[in-house]
Length: 252
Image (cartoon, rainbow, N blue to C red; front, side, top):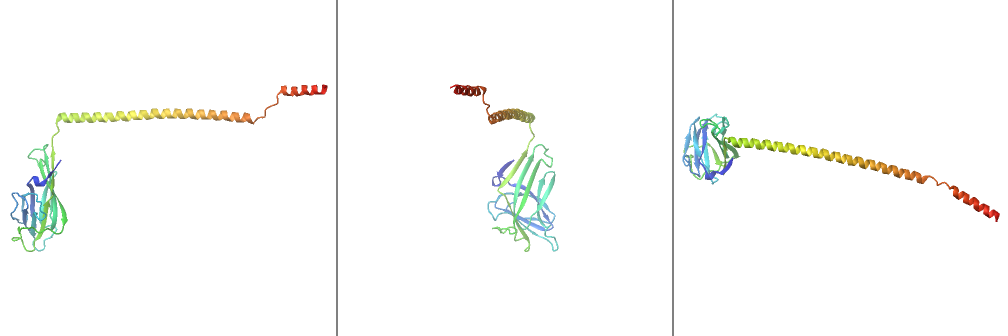
């Protein structure tokens, strides 16, 4: 998808219709086949106009509509249509100020006669209940005095999306690369599993050896302590020596 400047491209096709009213439209601030002229539409009439981008805040697309008495105001006015995927959508413009985002989708995988081959979509976003009065008179001299007014400005950027057929070799290489990447990931995961398993076994063996060594050392220390607690027996040689000395003293 490419994001481009609206001011450098265009004009852009936009389908509109007049719903349950008499409608008038005027595009100003840019150049197209529909700009700087009053476009009058009767109730139920639809047409495709050439929308363009304007830098001036008071320019853009101005609309006026007047409904017969008793008409529901929420269903009257100008509708803007979009070629959504597989079906057409529309949005009713409300009195006040709104902005529009344009998206162009070119699907080369579809036949030129197919609905989805080239689609134009407009996304309208409501901004304010007050439309800025244009510097020109526009259609105000022909619109009814009590007509509703709306101003719709195009956003400075638009989106150009292109869907193309994938080349066979590119597809094969992509699938092969994806399979290789998946296999590489699987082997790496297996390597990590084996490494952690071996490392865990090594650490367990080391821990067991340390525990056994600790217990053996503790047993040796306990044996030494027990031996230290026992009294040392007086040797026989010492007793005999005392006896001999006693005899010698008695003889003397």
